[in-house]
Image (cartoon, rainbow, N blue to C red; front, side, top):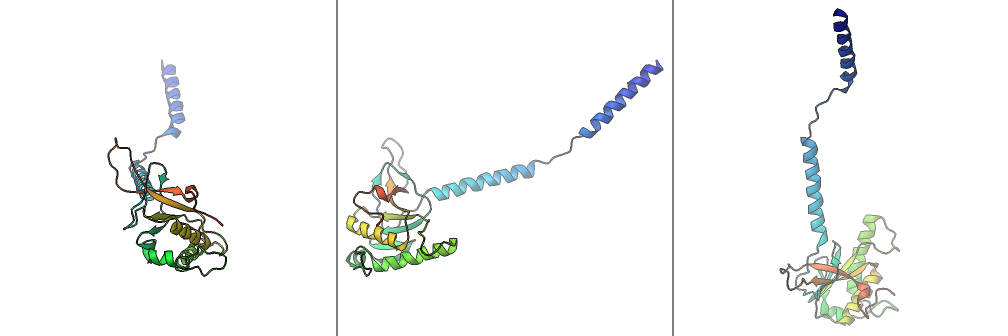
Amino acid sequence: MAVANRSRQNRESRRAAQFSKFRLAELNLVPLVDTFVSIVFFALTTATVGELAPVVPGVTLPDSRVGAAAAQQVTLGIGAQLTLAGHPVMSTVAAAQSVSDMPGQPLEIPQLYSALRVRADSLRGVRGTPAAEPVDQPLAIQGDRTMHYDLLSRVMQTARLAGFRNISLQVKKVEDKSAAPAPPTAMATPAATVAGVPTDG
């Protein structure tokens, strides 16, 4: 009987020694969950801000049912005035009547070219891009639905000469009549899809 008790004690001591290295450590998951929730919150709010672009005041965009959501980008508005990133550049009438001062480029608008060139040089300086390289930052044109195509053509050519290659036109997205009305937002349409408007030389 004593031998059986001694062998049982030996087995229990060996078992205890084996499982002693598997002791569980206490892990507080509250900070980990809080961090995860914060990351998800900031990711969702950042994505929402970046998908839509505000419409330039005084510009009535044409309607469209196709296109992608407009991301944050440099915005050029064409209404009663030409505005670049919300700042007035010149009146639309003056832009239409301006005469190019660049040889071989009759469509160039000098005052708009200067403003766009300053913005392009600023973007190049921030990103360390050489002066001769085109700007990667997209340029979104919000043109009023009453705008003439000849003015749009001049504006796009001027932007190209200033260094912008990624040019898109923004229109107001129109939902189906059966769906609830959506607030006015802008969506981008590649400028190359607009017939008769050159995007490069």
